[in-house]
Image (cartoon, rainbow over all chains, first blue to last red; front, side):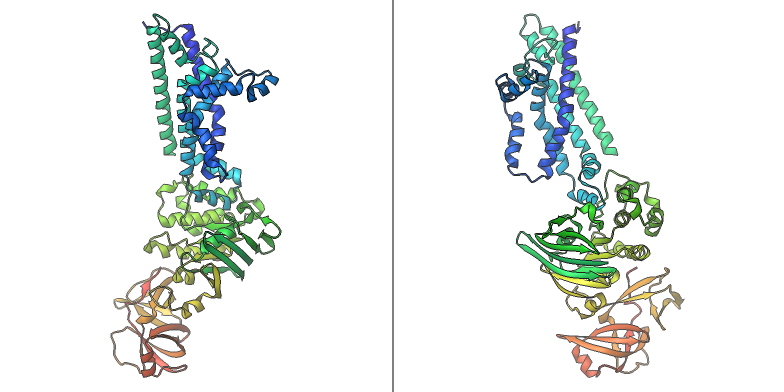
Length: 226
Length: 351
C-alpha cells in the first residue's frame, strides 16, 4: 500500500518550494548573464564563463562545501549577512541557494544558446526604428529567446528537484525545514524497513519530473506556434 | 537634404576614408562589393561608430569625434532598409509595420499608414504572419515599416539583391511612387548600374574605401565601359501599347516604336542594349528590322575597340555601341544624319 506520511508531503512541498524559488530568483540574473555572454564584449569573458559553469562539472558536494565556507559564520558573505541576522546554513534559504548555484549554469547555457541564435540584424533594425536598448531587449530579444528561456527554466527546475549533494551540506537534512524529496529518500534508505517508503517517494519524484517534461513540451509547442 | 560626411574607420586591414557633401533627394552610393558601401551605411545609421570625423544631417550633428557626440541609432531618425527584409518573426505583418510608427513622436508622424499601405500594395497582407510572405512582399513590408518612422533620410542597402530576377524590378514602381509621394530623401546603395539608374539622380562612386567621384547617374552610365558585362543599356519608358498587326506599337516622344511585347500598364519600362542598334548611312529601303529611325549624331566617344554614338531621334536620346572601324567607314561625326535600325524583338521588358 502506497501512502504518504505527513513528513513525505512536507518534503514534496519543500521540494517544490525550493525549486520554484530558486528558478524564479535565478531567471532574471540568468537572462542578464546570458545576454552578456551572447552579445557583450567584456574582458576575461572565458574566465567568468568558467566560474559560472564550474558547478556543472564539480561534484555537488564540493559546491556545497564551498558554499558552506562562504556562508558560514566566518565566511565572507556569512559574516556580512550575520550583521543583518540572516542565517543561511541549515535553513530553507540555504537549500534555495544550493539549488540556485547548481542549476544556474544549465539556465544560462540554454538562454545563451537561444540568444546567440537570434539574427543580430533584428536588433539593429529595431534600433533604427527608434527602439532604445531596453525597448529592443524587451520587444525583440526576450520574445525571440522565450523558448530558450523557458527551456532553461525547466531544466533548472528539474535539476533543483533532484539536488542533493550541495543541499545536504549547506542546508542539512532537517525534516520539515530543509528535507526535500531526495533527502527524504536518502533518509528512508538508510533506515531499516524504509524501502517501501523510499519507493513511494521515488514514484512521486518520477511523476513530478515527468509532469515537468510534459508541461515544458506543451509550452514549447505553443510558443513555436506563435 | 543636406548631408556632410567626413569619416575614417579601420576594420581589420580595411580602411574607410570618406569626405563628401550631398544635397538632393535621390542619391546613390555605387561601387563593387567590398568597397565599403555597407560600412558607410552602418556608420551613417549609427550601428557602428567611426574612429574619427563627423556626420551632419541638415543642422543636426549625428556624430563628431572631436566634440564626443555620437547619437544612438534610435535618436538619429535615419531609416534603414537592409538587403534582407528582417521582418520580426514573432509579430504579424501589422505589428511589424507599426513597430517604428509607435516609437515615433506624434509630431513627427507625417505619413498616414493606411495611405502608405495602399501605395505599397500591402493592405491585404496586414493580418498575416510574416513567414507566409514572398520575397517581394517582405521587402515592401520592410520599406513600409521604415517609412512609417518618417525618417529624415532613408538608407537602402542593396534592397533588391535579395530578390530573384523576376521580382526584382516589380518593386521599383512601388519605390518610385513612395519616394515621390512622401518626399523622403533616399540614399540608395547598390552595385548594380541598372538599379542605380532606376532609383537615383546622382551617384557617389565608392572604391576601396574612398569616394572616387560624384556624378549624375546617367552621366556615369554613359561614360562607364566596365560596369556589368552588358555595356550601355538604353532605358525606354512608354505608355500603354496599341496592337499593330500582330505586334505592338508604343509612342516614344514624337515617334512610334514597334515591339513584340505588349504593355498594358500605365508605365512600361524597357531596356535596349546599345549593341543591338544597327546604324545605316542611308535609308535601307527594306529591312527586317521593324524600327528605322532617322537620327542626328550628338557625340561620338571611344574606348579601345568600342565606340558609343549618342543619337538624337526627334526629342529622344539613344546611345548605340559600334566599333571604331564602322565609325570611320560610315563617316560618323558630330552633326551627321544617320538611320538607326532596331529589331522589334530586342527590347527587354523591365516592368
